[in-house]
Amino acid sequence: MPADRALLDRAIEHGEEEGGSVEFKERLTRAVHLTDGRLESLAAQLRHRVLSGDGEATYVVGVTDDGGIAGISSDAFSESMDVLSLLAEEAGAHIDDVQTWGVGEDGVDPSASRGIVGVATIREGAVLDTDDEHIVVGTAGHVDHGKSTLVGSLVTGEPDDGEGGTRAFLDVQPHEMERGLSADLSYGVYGFDDEDGPVRMDNPHRKSDRAGVVEEADRLVSFVDTVGHEPWLRTTIRGLVGQKLDYGLLVVAADDGPTKTTREHLGILLATELPTIVAITKADMVTDDRLAEVEREVERLLRGADRTPLSVARHGVEAAIEEISETVVPVVTTSAVTMEGLQVLDELFHRLPKTESGAAAEPFQMYIDRSYNVKGVGAVASGTIRSGTVSAGDELLLGPMQDGSFREVEVRSIEMHYHRVDEATAGRIVGIALKNVREADIERGMVLLPRSADPEPVREFEAEVMVLNHPTRIDEGYEPVVHLETVSEAAAIYPEGGQLLPGDTGRARLRFKFHPYLVEEGQRFVFREGQSKGVGTVTDIHPDE
Image (cartoon, rainbow, N blue to C red; front, side, top):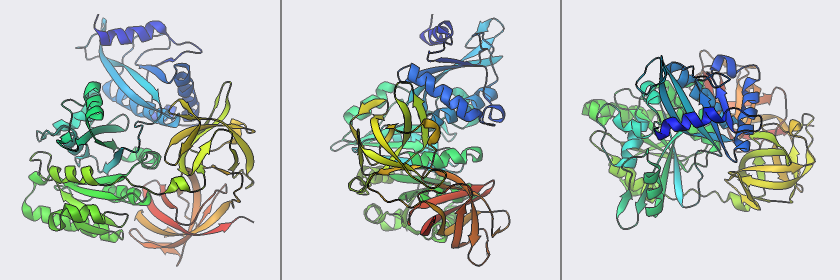
């Protein structure tokens, strides 16, 4: 019996158990499973399965509740993986591997086409477990602008076939190749040997190849390929904020030029204060005149966002390394087919410094992204440590509560990627078990601070905002959802002057609709509602009385 089929049979034979790590789902849909509180309950179920499996759960999709092989269409399976990815993210986990089989009239048959059954392996923690010895690059850009193809050529050193073939190096399964989208955050990794240059993979699908790069390279470069299509912009925002990224890589296709999505993703990258590189892709597909035109369009787009474009072709790699910042954006022209510009990117990623914020020396602060209850442990608050260090036994403040107050709590224990640690520092994604509070009282957007802090909850604040997209104009009282740190809350906007038009930058007053939060001057945020999106910076706060 082939090993891959044995995996499916073992999962079905093991079956669903109350305290087990296996879960059967016939299919998952956005319309049914992401509405009316279902997302939270299903994420809690997934978290339970992961904990029951010591950090790993198995989801069998395309089977009935009793384990019968049903099979679902490729589109239904792709949607199920999208939903499962979001549930895993909500539960502090990720899809590590997916295997699929065809279903025929007589059962499972790899060559059949009646439907698909699949096994998804879910693992605890973020997609990448980063450390201080490598840089992490978040890619963004319009669908079909070639970001996965570009990264595929970088990590393998192989040119693309002109049909997006190297995209396969970042997509996990054939059903993902068919739709050109990934079921989870895709990632690739390559590295550099100080003496021999780039260390690449022959086949990124082989775990041994990835392990070999980690073992051989003196420096690692990891790529997190964020979600590019509109329905999952919320996931893109959380992915860029939740990952410990050092740089952004925004792609713009030479044949298409900057699009509305390009503007939106640029805004998100800038809202996270991430030093960013723009790669103009598909240079082989256009004339020199068209390429020059797109370069001018990119430069206008960056200047419109108050950023200074730096053409690497004109000013050189040295200038790009010295000048890249939140305000200076290097622009590189590339082609994954001819490999133009990839050597330039190699040199940049080899030499760009690990970004350092000095946050570890500041007082401890962590915005809570999710919470859950662990049997025998109690309430656990999870998030990325924004600054400082936290240790087991520390006395902290948790809040603000609905009334704006903060509650005294104590750190019972700290978990980092399912491993117990005595302390954790800025940039780490952790789960902190807390004494003196119920899990039901912990909400996303709350913050943990030292007991000695004197926090002032904020319902209203002033900001400098830029409107990326809006169908008409933003008038006083317009209520989008504001994403600031882990806060996701409706807020009314009152523009200075009474209105803001698409592309405008101006001052505005914002007021949270339901709840006060800890907001500080200088924090960046994203706001969105339907097709309307914008970014902003907090300039002044109005603490609640």
